Image 1: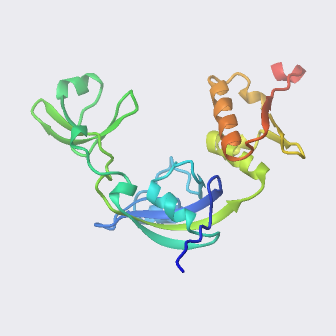
Image 2: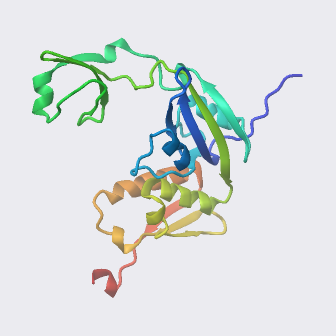
Image 3: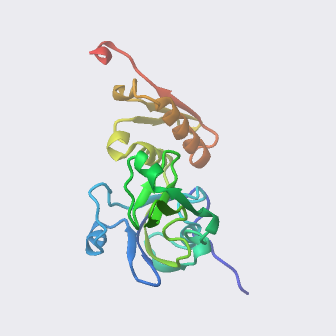
Length: 239
């Protein structure tokens, strides 16, 4: 009798380490491990190298990697080969466009081949060529059409609801900032109170952040809970 054992399920909170490379060339293009980034000459001071949180079912990572994690267990390590359809997609010829060199220069961009250009609408393109007054831009993902290989390890799995709430805070605010928030969960797990530090009382767009935090907590951690954000005002709040 053939059957599948699914190690993890939707809404599980899993931390992974990984090294990702292009199959054809062996080039490492991403990793959560600082030492591996330095060895591959892709290290960046702007990146925090640490295990990555994956909330299964959230689809925050490529589908082939997420599917592989479902079949893993805590502490397990495996190498996964992922085809383009489940990685960064197949190339779409309609996403290759020709634009005026003058228009780009007016935006403060002096393009050259392989340069990445980010536009105000959030789209990103790779400069394929600059010829005369024309620039060929490719809006496909740089790894489109590539089969990739992930060496992935499940390093931690969260079980406790308060730990999961803290993980959501860290996801949106960063670990150092999340540590400033108080978390109080009632015994019946129907009421969650999050105390907001005074540093955030006047942060622009923080109401949107609160909305996103509450959405993720209810969707992935405490679906039957009422989530409250508490701001406490006293004399030293205004000093």
